[in-house]
Image 1 (cartoon, helix red, strand yellow):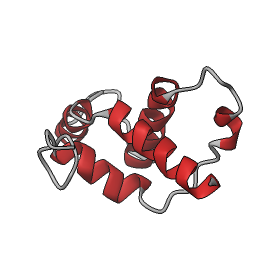
Image 2 (cartoon, helix red, strand yellow):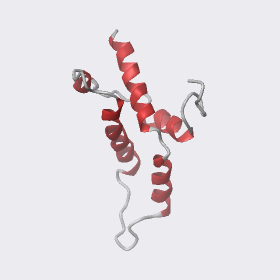
Image 3 (tube, one colour):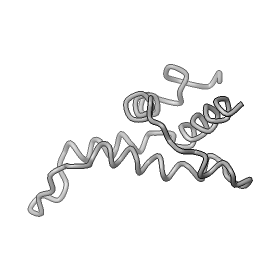
Image 4 (cartoon, helix red, strand yellow):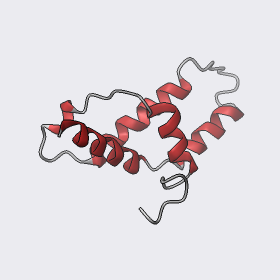
Length: 99
């Protein structure tokens, strides 16, 4: 992976989300891996949802101010994450563990 830009990852956001949200997280990829058509793009949306739940769960919502600066920054940060790269990484790790 010679085109990576941050600790072997596409960018800082991808590295950091992997490190702080997914490192050590046990995902049951058995559910997906039995499907011969399954690939990383099938896992991307689920990974993004897991990250958003981890970051925003329990956030206080104020209808007078539906968005706050901290949440705006966090959502902007998450837009930079390469979800496909994270999904490929998890699938690769799963395949190594299964062999």
